[in-house]
Length: 149
Image (cartoon, rainbow, N blue to C red; front, side, top):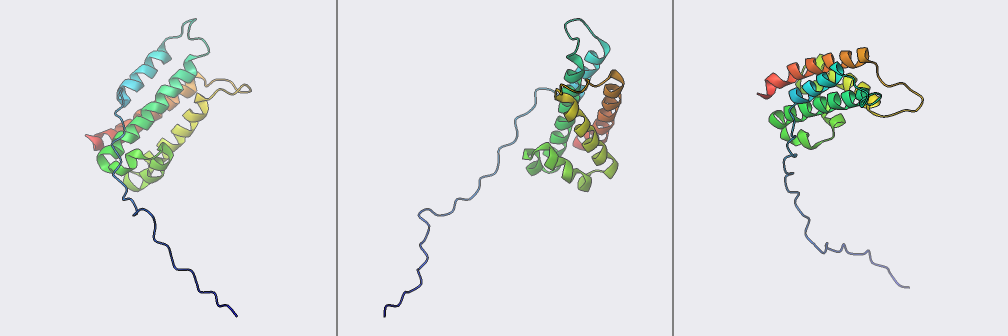
């Protein structure tokens, strides 16, 4: 009768690597305020060359302003979170900022994300919707930017 001995663990071929700290995210070329100003310019002008395009362009600028505001907030408050996707950053926001600002950021971002994508069966966002979202973005910037500086 042959007895089978348990296998001995094999040491790994390479020692485990320690994770290096992540480099800082690349700086944006535009501040949230500049993105908001760009959205304001598009909201105030409508030409034949921008017909049908400007609502989604405004939504994209507003969403980018929200994301940039959040990235800058985390860069100074908790730099590890600046590397996470915006959704993960937003989930943490309620623990650091006031709950109203966190909810406003999430709700506005969700509306703008939906508005940024073309859906053949839906109309583009109206100017009234975009103006309301623009005001929400401005409130979020005002709530988070003073803490950054």
